[in-house]
Length: 115
Length: 114
Image (tube, rainbow over all chains, first blue to last red; front, side, top):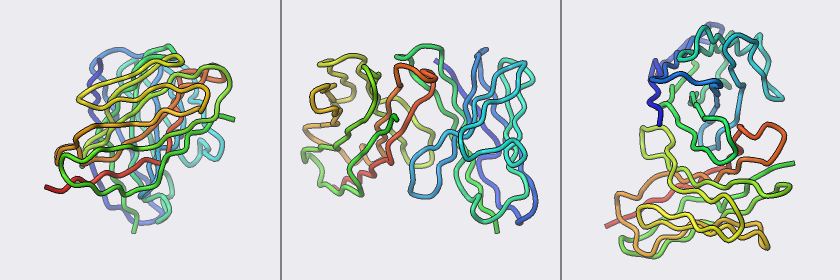
């Protein structure tokens, strides 16, 4: 299993500013995942963060808007840049061991409100 | 492509009622199927899973059977409790094209009243 600490747990930000979300895992993992959960909706994968290489972004998400760092095997950050009210969501960090049948573990999420 | 469709919520039940939350999927081959639960203010956690056709996953009184013929993975519980109030997500792990990704349904909110 894995325990994931995510911070901040919530924030209210002004439009046009940026927020960096931190994700710390209690064990070394190869891949870390960042999801967005818009109000009342499901989880959408933003990107996969690999240590030592550029993150892989899903369709509709770009590095300029959501830069990701992965400095080591237990830590990652996601920045939401130049925020607008449409960025108001819950952002979730997740890890999952390699394999089709493995369980994914999630942080508690960061609830972001952009005003 | 791969996708998951869940019944819309919210589902509102009285304590001890029977619960069914429908989930169907579209995928090639034999994906692995999961149910995750999100309690208020918390992250998602695995409830149960099934990795091949006719497998039944079970946990905490919840069950779901992997039905290849109907491409379904419906969640059931015989007698719900107030503590089961949460959002339930059906998800699949595809066979190919990045098998470490999970694809989620829209989620179904369950509210159980005493």
